[in-house]
Amino acid sequence: MIIKNRIQLATTELRKNALDIIEAGIEHVLPSNLMRRALHYDITSRVLNINHTTYNLARGRIFIIGGGKASAKMAKELEDIIPATHITAGIVNCKGNDYETKNIKLITASHPIPDHRGIIGVKEMLALKQKYAIGRDDTIICLISGGGSALMPYPATGISLKDKQKITSIMLASGASIAEVNIVRKHLSSTKGGQLGSHFAPSSVITLIISDVIGNDLSVIASGPTYPDKSTFSDALNVLKKYELLSKTPKNVLTHLEKGCYGIVSETAKHLDNCYNHIIGDNKVALEAMLIKAREIGFTPLLVTAEQQGDTTNAAVERANEVLQKKYVGYDALILGGETTPRLPNSVGMGGRNQHYAAESIIAMNRYPGQWVVASINTDGSDFLPDVAGAIVDKNSQTKARTSKSDFDAYIARYDSNALLSKIGDSLVKTGNTNTNVGDLILYLLK
Image 1 (cartoon, rainbow, N blue to C red):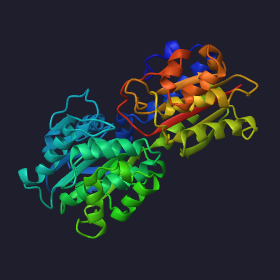
Image 2 (cartoon, helix red, strand yellow):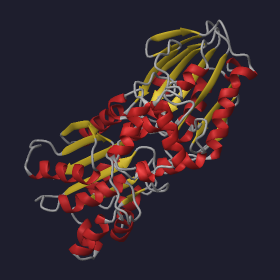
Image 3 (cartoon, rainbow, N blue to C red):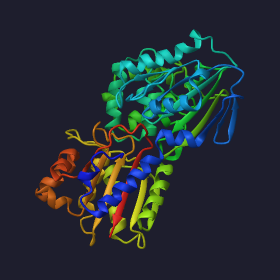
Image 4 (cartoon, rainbow, N blue to C red):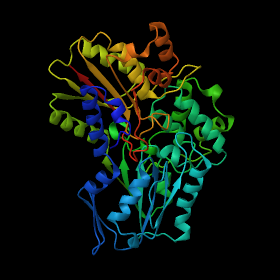
């Protein structure tokens, strides 16, 4: 059972249906299922098949590196697919580690704000090349998933961990998209933006990716450590200017970016002939599983989009208006995926984008004439707060809050969705660490 408190949350049949559909989506993108569907390894010939692309690994040794919210489970599954005796060594950074691996060392680091443990892990990854004299005939398998940007920090020369922590914090609160955040991250790093793949050249680097990025842009997922980067130092500076962050940015960061603009600091990797990237799972895989489950239960579902983005408040209000304006007549289950971006006020409460989306939906869906349920869940199990994956709300949620309309609005205005939903009760969804990450799943059930 993925949702740990589902008995408490399943107070109506419609809510139970919603939880079943959400669980089906998450279940389908667990690393164990994704890895088994995508990979096959022949022990005798040492040929690795990834989604019908074959790699002959018999010429040299196999090394494993990587990082992300799903990386620990990916590493564990990989050792079951490729015997540990065929893996010379490996270092993988992860958010939480509940697994025992044989030849792959798992290092727990911090997310979403990077820490020194992540730096230690990346140093050990880079050191593998010299330690084992890794050469042209050897193969590096890199395991990447959402969260890899924070979990695999390695600041460029002149940038401290404190600098990285501060710029990450202010950008996550600015309303910048993950692509924009990662443009800046790549230009403050020695490994992001293809530089990790470049480090291991001329060895082949085969990257297995569980994507949490809308559109599956390989240069954005975990800041593209093994994929060529088209962005520039000028682009990074322009992101900070766009969101009026220059005055808040650490001096070392600005100095580094300006040096890059003048060519004093080398750009990110623009060509990588030794790297091969494979997406083995993404948001749409989860959404399609939700469609199947909804049909099994008896709903008429519609996959609205796998690319919901933009401001969290606007997205919730706009979707509710579409329902109220009868845009989806004939469908009683609306399935969406993606990742919205909250723009936080100066004085902010506790919560995450999924909790905020659910809280906004309570008001936005209030005029719907029948029964309804809205669930918004982060597939990794952490909606900014580590013990909350998101929320489920329904037509009775505002009444259960036992608070005035003005107080209700005040909670939402200060992004204090966790306190509001805690007051309502039977709303906060708890899964614990799911060991996967393909972004958010949103579900509307309508009667």
